[in-house]
Structure formats: structure tokens, C-alpha cells
Amino acid sequence: MVENRRRNWRNIAKKCITINEKTGWKKQLSLLPYIVNSRKDPSLLANLQKDDYPILFEGLHTTYFINHTSLKNRIKLVRAHNIEHHYYKGLFRNEQSIYRKTYFLIEALKLKRYEHKLIYADTILALSTSEKDYFAKYYGKDKTVYLPLFADLPKQAPTTKEIVPQVLYHGDLSTPENINAASFLMQNVVPLDQSISWIFAGLNPDPKLIRLASQYSNISLRANLRKDEMDTLIKESAVNILYTKQVSGVKLKLLNALTKGNHCLATKEMTEGSGLSRLCIEISHNPEEIIRTIQSSLIQKISPEEKGSRYSTLSAIYDNNKNAQILIRNIKE
Image: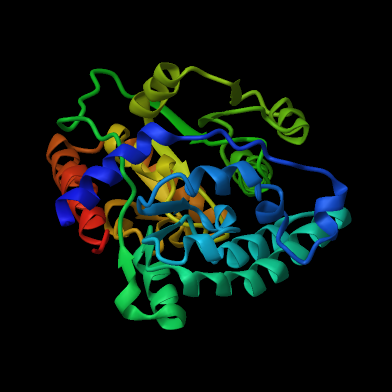
């Protein structure tokens, strides 16, 4: 029976369906969170009803049908990407636009109310230890499991022949969280030492960031790079800085910076619950303290031994084979 379940689980990948996200202002008038309401496509339910395989809901926003009567006897797992209403409250606090602030606040309230649907999950898979503690508190320790990201780590600690004395900030430069972080660095940290070269790289830079970057000769803004180009920047930069004021789950860019890069400077909000804080140099939200930490990091190179130790820690936590077994064990009979 267990082996049949596992075989069925492997077959799920063959039965993927593309769900058209239905957007529009009418979707925002519902009591449902917009990120849920815009994804309640009937074709998804129809597809799920074709078999009796276990169901993995990728994120709270996909769970509209989790308590549907036709799925009552199915094994249901929810991969919690983060604590969604906490994330949207963070966006609310950091947003400047009144319209967007209102949207984020309303969405946070809706998500907090909607989150109760997790009672219908057999297992909640948390990305971080802090999120595991949260979900265990409200939905039960017996159904909450810490399952790290499935990460594409290199087979061995990478080496870099040439390290460039520059600071790299990277991420999706069109999202509010990253726009706020990059803006803070450009406006408050970069001007403190204009002899330091900065690179801000990522997808679709917001016009505000383009405008700010143009004011400083020591800032280079790189937009929409290929993966190999971004990897080269991460590997060559003496300092990768990961700044945020809000806790929003474990970030892939944190893993990329630690596995491929050199010094990794991160705020405590960036590393919370990841188990990786000891691998980073913690920075505060004080610009003067940040620039002093950058200056000292640019002087002192990271040793091959430190890189090797860091890679060993990452490999132990983000072992895809080990973590796949955790997932398999939670597909119950």
C-alpha cells in the first residue's frame, strides 16, 4: 500500500495542469484573499478529481479546494511558503502609496482569516524553523513538519580565481520588499563611502531605483541578467549584502549568496528560522554600522577553509535526497 502511494506520488508530476490566474478588480471585492480568489479555477478541481493521488498544495494561495467534499478522503499536504498575513503586513508597513498600503492591509486581514483552512491539511510543510513553530502552535505539532527548500547546490564548494572589491545587492527589483531595501541602501549607505563600488542587479528595476542609481557614479544597475551572468556577479563580488526589514521566509538568494559568494552580510530578518545566521555577518539597520561592516569585509578576504565549512553546513541542511525522504514519510496510508 505504501509503495503504491509512493508510485502514485511520483506520477503527480505527469498530471500537471496550467491554471489561468483570473485577475481584476471584482476579485478584490470578495472576502477571500485576492491571491486565493484569483486562482480558484474549476479546471484545477476537475483535474484533482481524476485520481486518488496525494495532493501537494504549493502555498496557501492554491488551497481554495482543500476542503471540497470530493477531496475529503485524499491525503493533503500544504507547502507553506511563509506566514502570508505576516508577509503582507510587512508590505503594508513598507509601502508608500496609500492605495497599495490599503490593498496590503486588507489582504493581510483576509489572509489571517483564511489561514484557518489549514485545519483541512494532513501535513503542513514549513520552510523555516520559526514558521514551523508558528504553524505547530495553531494547527498542531503532529501535523507540522520542517522541510527545507529543495535547492540546486553545487556538488562542491565553488572557488573563484578573482574576487572583485565590490558590493552586490541582487533580487527581483520590481517587488516592494526589494525596492524598499535597495532604496534604503542607495539613499543611506552608498553616500557614506563613495569609493566603494556597488552593483544592484535583478529583474525589472523599478523607476525609483533607476533614478536613485543615476545619482551616484559608484552604483552600477544591472537589469534582467541571465542566470550565468548573475552567478558570476555573486561569485566575484567580495561582499553580497542581503538587506530587509521584514521576515518573509527563507530566500533562495540567501542560499545562492552563501553557496556561490564570498562575505555574506545579512540582517537578522533575512536569516530568521533558516539555521544559516551563523554563516552570515549580521548587519543592523544603522547605515553607519552597515558601512563599517562593509569596509572591514572588503579588506579581509574569506578563506577557502571558511567557504568549505560553510558549504558543509549548507549541504547538511539542504540535502535534497534526505529532504525528499521527509516528504515521502508524510504521504501517509
